[in-house]
Image (cartoon, rainbow, N blue to C red; front, side, top):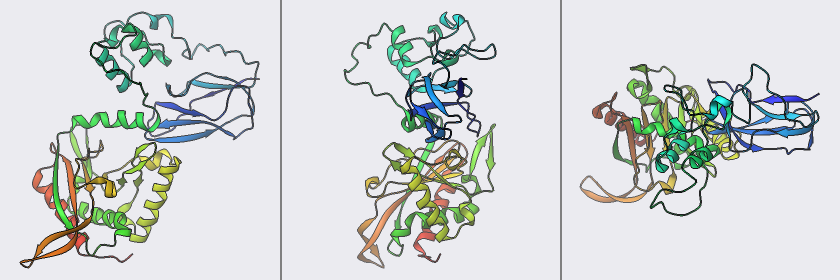
Length: 367
């Protein structure tokens, strides 16, 4: 008897996922709980085991496709024939006849931000495009077909590289950043008395302590109101080969320095290995980003929606500075605070940044 495996509900309000990589191929025999497929969602990749054993009869959704929860992804067992859709299901591969026609006025257009961007570049009105993806979703191929398969005049030639997995999630997530009127404040920090081997946990502790004094930076905008959060779940940006990942140190305000260091290490290793769970990438109330030496003297971080602020760390090196009227060499680096100016004023953001710097310069190193 054939077993139809559907994209499961991955929790946290997710309604769809991307097929990042199939771990099996058609005709392969697998056992129950063997690795089956990797699903990319919300900046992480989740490996899903097979719920049944047997022969992989048919893979219905190709890698790179985004499909809603409940879509049949693969058939295990049976004679290999494509399963007939049940009355309560949407067809999985071919769109329903009404999806072939142009959409009627007011009907929702289902397309990812990347597809919408391609449509804009090619001058294609998505309202008149028939989607061939699951549930009528418009794909990039649909848009290019509607444009006649040609590039716009003056478009540079080159290779089209699809945004998939983490990079697609980054694109879609950060598309919202343009909605935020962000302002960045920056100041020098003297790191001479800071143990740079424990820099990130030291910064997390300084940030958590300072957020207690400035609760409007530990918040999010919700239904036109600023929701001040009573938890300190701080996201830490980690650059991986797959792209930027922001795992969250939950309960950072209640952890010791040693506990913070251990948790940051664990999350960073999981980010590089691609093994983080969805809940380890959600719920951040504030973000810290640092690219180490590659960060340069200063960049302009993007506020990680729905948070309202992010703190940046930059290259730390010996610099000449003036102390008590004399030029001395100190280990200096810049610290920035980028914030949503709709809900935070510059004075408060600056005071928060100075509070963080003050705590770091105090040189408190105990665990």
